[in-house]
Structure formats: C-alpha cells, structure tokens
Image 1 (cartoon, rainbow, N blue to C red):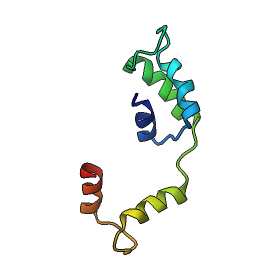
Image 2: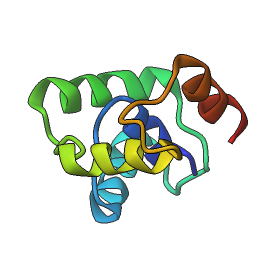
Image 3: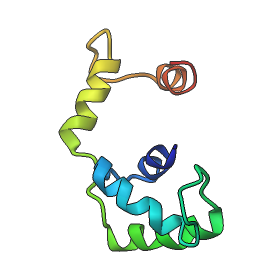
Image 4: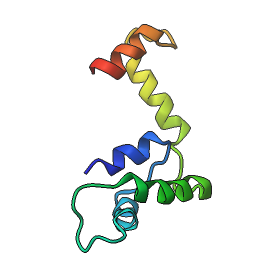
Length: 90
C-alpha cells in the first residue's frame, strides 16, 4: 500500500501505472499481492531502478512551487525550524 511513498522517498517519481508494474517485481513468488513487500525482494528491484534511473525525478519547478507554498511570509526561504515543523507535524 505504501510502495509509492517508499519509492518517492528515494527520489523517484513513477506514475501510478508504473507503480502497478513495479508491484509484481517485488512480490516475485506471490500468487497474489499480499499488501507486504519483503526487503530481500525490494532491495534488488529498487537498486536496479535507481541505477537505471528508471523513473523521472520531480521537476524543479514543482519542487520550487512546493517550497514557495511553505514560505507563507514570501521571504524567499524557509527556516530550518519551519522545515522541521512541516516535516514532523504537518
């Protein structure tokens, strides 16, 4: 269920269709998807994805827009404390 979050946290931004293609690769021996991904199956698949740069990175303008949205006072930056708060509380 959280495979998209895990993959995105590694800097990859696959489409939903690409995620659905990835699921069977990490559940190689499973007849049906169980909802769990075993690390020993995930690591080789994700290592190949990262080395091959299979998925596009997030576009720079999207990332900039996200930070601009967090910069409520329009200062052109957010403080370390603000970033920590957003990442841990929001």
